[in-house]
Length: 160
Image (cartoon, rainbow, N blue to C red; front, top):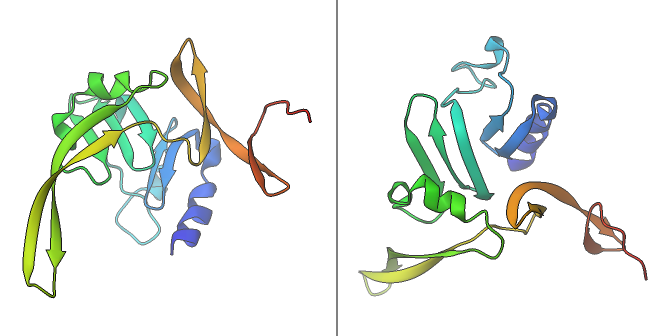
C-alpha cells in the first residue's frame, strides 16, 4: 500500500509540499474543498500551522493558528513534553538532544514484560535528502542523486 500512497501523494507536488508521508501531507497551499472529507481517497484536514519544524521522517513539531502545540516523534511517547523552541534549536548544524524514555520489552517464552529506561537521541536526519544550511541553520533540503549506484548530493559539482 505504501507505493500507491506515494504515487497518490506525488500528484500534489504543485501545492508546495513541505513534508509528506504515506498518510499525510503538509502543504503551503490549501487543497480544493472537494479533496477534503471522510470518503475514501479524500484527505482529512487536521491543522493549519503558523510555524512548523521538520527534523526527519515522522519527526515534527508545530504551532497551530489556533494556539495549539503539536509534536510527533516516532518512537518517543512524551513528544509534547519537548518545547517548540527546543525542537527548533535542533535545526542548528551538528545539534542533537538526548532524551530518556521508558520502553517495554516482551519476552513471550518467559511470559514477562520488562520496562527499561533508554536514551533516545533526537537529531536531524540526512538519510533521504541533503540538508541545506544557511549561517549554520537548516533552511531546506534537496534530493540526493544516484550516479553509478553511488548516492551523491544533487546539485553539487563533483570532479574526479
